[in-house]
Length: 485
Ligand code: SAM
Ligand code: SF4
Image: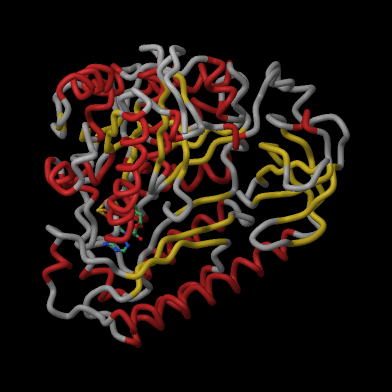
C-alpha cells in the first residue's frame, strides 16, 4: 500500500486488444507527460489509471468490467492514504458503451473515446474535480494534430521498433465487426505528418517502423503535392528517412492489396518479408455473408502475386470460426486454405456476436460446442504450418533487430525479418541494433541462433547504430493485457 507523496503525479495505462491501442496508450502517456505526469509500473502508485479497452469480442469487453471490479479496492486504499485515484476508461468499450460504463462501474471517473485523447489533460482535471465525465464525440478536429510527440527519452524507453498510426477507422462494414461503429469513418494522415513523426523516432534510435491502421493499406493520405499518395509510395518515402532500417505495415484488407503495394515487397529492401493479411474464412459463401468483398480465389490470387514478388514472404492471417450459418464443409474450406497458403502464423477466434452488427441478428448462430471444436482443429492446422515455416528457417542467416535481454543471463532476444522472435547468446549492447544471425534451431514459436558478425551489422551504415541508452522493449510502462490482440 502506498502513502501520500508529494512527487510528480503518476500515470498507469493498461492496454487491451490491438496495436492501435498500444500506440494510443503511448500517445495518452505523452499528452499527460506535458502536464507533469510520469508513468509508473505499479497500479497502486497511480494518481490516474487508464484502461485502454477493446470491444472486438464479448470476452474482451467483459475483461474490462472484471478489472474495474478489482479497481474498487485500489481506489478505496488510495482514499484511505489521503490520495485521489482517478480511473479512466478509454478505447472502443468507452466509445461503444459511454455512460453505461459509469452506471455499471461507479468506480469510473472518466470515459473517453479514441477521438478525444488530445483533450485528456482537461478531461482528467475535470474528472478529478467533478467526477463522472464522459467524452465520446467524434470531433471535427484531427486529434493527431493535437497529440504530443514523445520525448526522445520516452521513445528510447519504448525500444527499437515503434508503431506509427497512419490510418484510423473503417468504411468496410464487415457484418461481424464493431470497428466502423467504434472507430468511425476511414481517415488517412497526411504524408508530411507521418514523415515528421518517423524522422523524430529514427533520430531517437528507432530502427523499425510499423505503420498501423484498422485498414492500413486503404491509406491514401495527402502528399506534399496536395494529391493523395498510395501506401507503396509512402513506404518508399519512409525508407529514405535516415536511420530507418526496417518497415512493416498492419492490418491490411485483401481488397486493398494493389499491384504497386505487392511490387514494393519485391523492390523495397527496407520492407520486411512479412505480411498480415486477414482472410477470416476459406469459403466463398461465408466471405460473401461476412461482406468481405472478395472470394476465396481472389484471396489466393493476391497470395500468389505476393509470393511471386517476394518468395520468402511470411504470411499471417486472422480467422473466425462458427460465423452464423457456417457448415462443416465450409469450415473444411478454411482448413484447406491454411494448408494451401502455408501461413507462418495466424490468429483464430470463435465468432462473437456484437450488438448492433448485422451478423449478431442472424438466427443461424453456431453452437458454442461446435465453435470450440472448429477452433481447436483450426489451431492445430495453424500450429502445424507455423512449425513448418520456422523449421524451414533453420540453417539460413538473416538480420535480427535486437530488442531486450532474454530469460537467461547473457541471452538477447530480437526479431527476424519474418517477425519470429530470435534468441541468441550475446551482449546487452546488442539492444537496438541489427546483427546477422545464423538460425540454428526452433523453439516454441521462436528461433535460436548464433551471431555471425560480432559487430552489429548496421554499424558501418547508420549514424544511429549505437542507439545510446536504448532500453529493452519490455521497459515500456504501457502495460499490454496478455490475452488480447
Ligand atoms: N481490419 C482488419 C481486417 O479487415 O481484417 C481486422 C481488424 S479486427 C480489429 C481484428 C480481427 O478481429 C479480425 O480480423 C477478425 O478476425 C476478429 N474479429 C472481429 N470481429 C469479430 C467478432 N465479432 N467475432 C470474432 N472475431 C472478430
Ligand atoms: Fe472490421 Fe476489418 Fe471489416 Fe473494417 S475491414 S469492418 S475493421 S474486419
